[in-house]
View 1 (cartoon, rainbow, N blue to C red):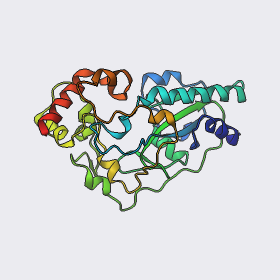
View 2 (view 1 turned 30 degrees about the vertical axis):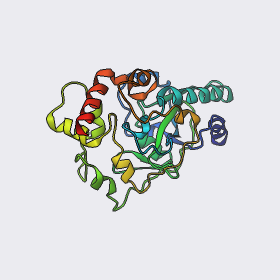
View 3 (view 1 turned 135 degrees about the vertical axis):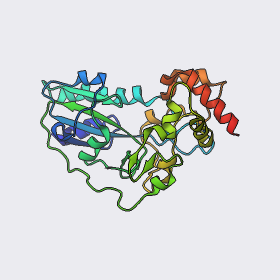
View 4 (view 1 turned 120 degrees about the vertical axis):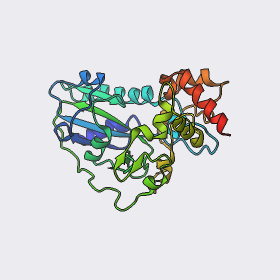
Length: 267
């Protein structure tokens, strides 16, 4: 059964697929999408969507946001997989989730044998390293779980030592200090927050901990949907174009223009 499922994912170009039992997840996350969970859900089919688009040495947005918004692209892939699954297993439910999901994605991926959780909180997968989005399909099929990945990062502390703002430490992750979080924050910023954005040089996101990871996995994504229309430099002139297709569009023009101004001040 699982081999048949894997073939249906592969038909959409998705190579890495695993299964975990819903009951083995610590708890579901509260979000609006939780209402879409199928009744009598038993299994989570987890897949990796590599996004590394190639190197762009001159850029002012994080690597994951260079190309067009992955949310509709990834959801489209999974919806097509779910349609095929519905035909292959009639009478069973298959519901796709990407990002806006009640499934704790990194934990689910580790339980499904697809990688380990790094000290930076992101999944580290073989071949593709940290450069993966995670998708899931929740089903009422009772599937045999894959062998979970339980090892951690050992003595490696590369991401902790590299984090420029002190968001990562042995004590854990402080979201409010993360540069990526600060570039997404609405409203007024404190002076130290503005300075972090200036020093970071990115209008959106931060790649420092990913770049520091020795398992970063810079392998070009095999999914064309994840490499579509890269825009490495966001400017006032191309902002309207970006707001139509990029993942950061949801934060709106005001936040992006604020960050752009801060970056210009730091030059």
